[in-house]
Image (tube, rainbow, N blue to C red):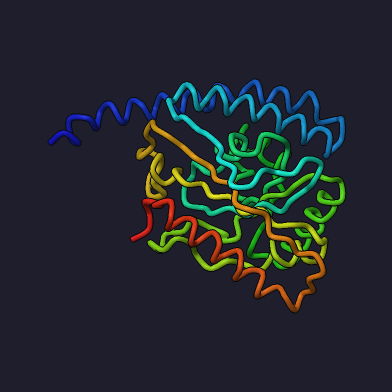
Length: 253
């Protein structure tokens, strides 16, 4: 009964959240147009910083209170391959709340088609079309070139939403192959409450409350070869799986 009574307020809240989301994106879009001539790397960093400001304002307006928890701190002047679980549409908005300095996430090419937001998205994210082997190979080359510039990258190794009821879906190889080929440490990150704040089934499940991102210890790949890739992937998977269970991730059945 209480859920029925609260439903109109939930709808109003989500409509309000969408309106503020889009409204705040407009100045980020204009800023993107202004800095775009500065080149892909510099403009990408400047657009990312604008997204950090956008996220700080939007999350405050929708009463989602986020904090980052570091089991092991991020080393200064070191690039990482961050790998994170993927469970909600809110994960994209959480990226600039979680990573406070520029990173380049690997994201679905389809989202780049969204008006305004898509323009910003494709300038701060390395897009990938998983249906095209050629496009996947191109995305990998771009990620490698970004790492050489000292900029970290972010990969969701599950590839899509985890709707299994398990802590994680099976991981793709990409992040681990790149880590070994570039000798870049992997830093696992848990998005622990995005499922609580927005269920993957509907954007109308968005609700206010706490949000946490947990940075786990880095995994060194020093001296590893591609023969070690499966063992590396399994090690990171088990580390993240255990941490999600220990922290009581709500989607685990």
